[in-house]
Amino acid sequence: MPAILFDIGGTYIRSAVSKNCCNATQSSLLYYEKKAIRNFLDGIPDNLVWRELFLHIERYVASVSDEVGLAAPIVVSFAGPIDAAETIVSASSILGRAIEFPDVRAILAEETRRSVFLLNDMSAATWYISSVSSFCRFMVITVSSGIGCKLFDRQSFHGVADRETYAGEIGHIVVDHDPGALICDCGGTGHLQAIASGRGIERMASRHAMRDLTGFGASLCSVKFGASEKRITNEEHLVPAAVEGDAWALNVIRECTVYLARVLATITIASGLEKIIVTGGLAQSLGQVYLDILLGAMRDNDFVLFPFNLNLLQMCPPGDEISLVGAAIYANRRLGVE
Ligand SMILES: [Zn+2]
Image 1 (spheres, rainbow, N blue to C red):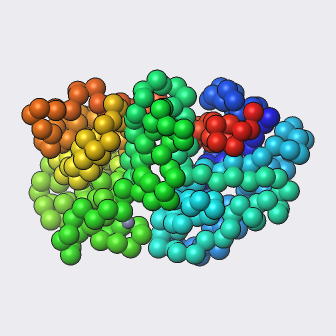
Image 2: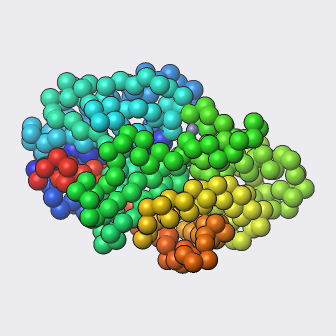
Image 3: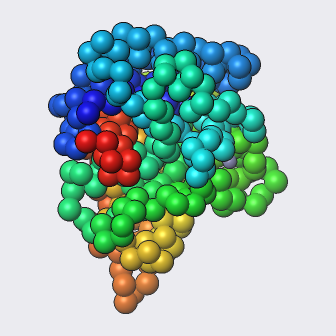
């Protein structure tokens, strides 16, 4: 049966139709769309963010309705933890410190007269990786505007380990107890996501640039790519400078990534992971440079009897549609949608 799929992230909403859910792949998606959304960083109220999202979803569903038929369900992959009742618990990359959320499932079901299901976007990405790999026990981690992860165990009936609402929400662990540590989108101080995410690395770079104008002024970020101490972005400055081997940019990224490496080292040992698949805009744009920094920092925490395998980390295959395909696979494995 077809399904109508949405992936709501911190910056974009992606939409597609899967012809069926039992063999969903990137190439089986139809009517793919990607649209920028407005979020709390644009200074607009939460209800307007939601109104724009609902309008977009309702329009898209109406546009594909004849094609998919009335029985096709809607499956939404969402960038925030989802509880057992499929309600949103938090959405810091979209709505910052908000603690109240509309009942997305009930509202969309009422508006579209369809069955509606919600799952966390990292769960969706992990379902996708499980369909294109044969690893028995692995973790998927995203390093983008936020940080999150999910574990997969092929021997477990559940596959993706997401029974607990907090599963994979490692971005909000306090890793820096200094009162002057960077502030997280959720409002907390010194959270892993505040420091090691794409947004965290940009903030740390600005902080370093203002404290050491001479060092920053000599970096490729400034000399070649035109960054100023008040405006340094990953896309325009830090990533291209780091890929060219700029020591200043690499040091900022390494300093932020050490915190993530410590957390991942502990999870790897505790869970007996075979593989960590790394995804997310910041990590994927840096590619091997990022994997080398992360693995190097993890190996500073390993134990001589059990050193981390040099192939422990792997970059996720590129593709904007990963969580959409994963949502279709989830619908098949967990909900029985064929
Ligand atoms: Zn936080």
